[in-house]
Image 1 (tube, rainbow, N blue to C red):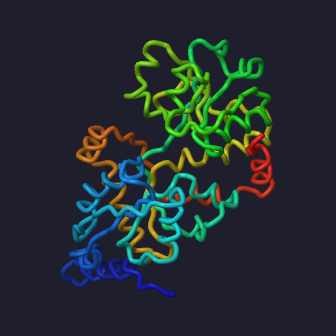
Image 2 (spheres, rainbow, N blue to C red):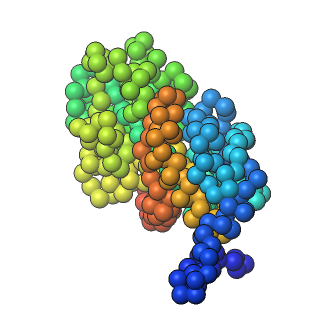
Amino acid sequence: MATRRLVPTCHWLTIASTFLGFAFIPCNAAAADYFAGKTIRIVVGFGPTSAYTLYANLAAQHLGRFIPGKPSVIVSQMPGASGINALNYLSEVAPRDGTVITVPTQDIVSQQLLGRKGLRYNAASFSYLGRATANVPLHVVWHTTPVKSFDDLKRHEIVTGASGSGGTHADLPRAQNALLGTRWKVITGYGDEVRVAMSRGETQAAVSAATLFNSQYKQWLDERMIRVLVQYADFRHPNFPDVPTIIELADTDEAKRVFKFLVSLSTIGRAYVAPPGLPVERVTILRKGMLAMLNDPAFKADAEKRGADLLPMAGEELATYINDVVNTPPDVIRRTTEVIAAR
């Protein structure tokens, strides 16, 4: 269905005001009229204490200041199926007018390509507005292990805890065993106790988000209780510039492609997404507002106060990145499925 475009209208109004002396009508006038008095709802597919809700609450506090018409912004919880229910709602039910957005699960693309049951969306079709931060996991070993570098993992079996049977904690070590010759022994079922199990000596390694080492686990680094071996991302986190990524450590093209796909969720991180089919002018308004918010000093100060990391990415760049991941070749997906299978 065709949509009325506002940009050409504003363009001709500008020409008219220049050559005919007409009063200039601001290009955001229609946008202000549209959003004025409205409420933007941020749907979160997880519980109120999740990191996704943290970034939704931040946007609810600040985003309205940067949208023409100053709409109010609220958060709505819609937990279920590890964030999938919210994405299905966004794809099938939510109004396509800019009044509903979400902070999607970071594996929005990988879940789809790996054939997760219950998905009723196409990740490429969503309107990507921007990213607040990446979510880079680090794999660490306890200081009593004989492992001092990544290569040592090929000589020593190391027990690493995993929160569940799948996901980064389990999938990345299994893929390394299959593709790089490491000797991780994955023990699943620890839930939120992965790091505690390592400190108790039940396991020897754990995966933790890079941002946690700014606060909760900073003492471990300062006292050298852990060694950081690798980060699961396609870039080095600014706080760990000397720690290699798993893609850098991969020694074959096949391994690099598999790991690039597996760590894509780290780059997606905590993003803001609108439904498919949103009119172009609304996407533009929301992207501009989101980018202005992410660069706002008051927003940054609030994020720091709440312990929320910021590594922003503009909506256009995020959309391009998502599209690249969606187009991962089928042979890479097949190989990924093989190497992350539980053994």
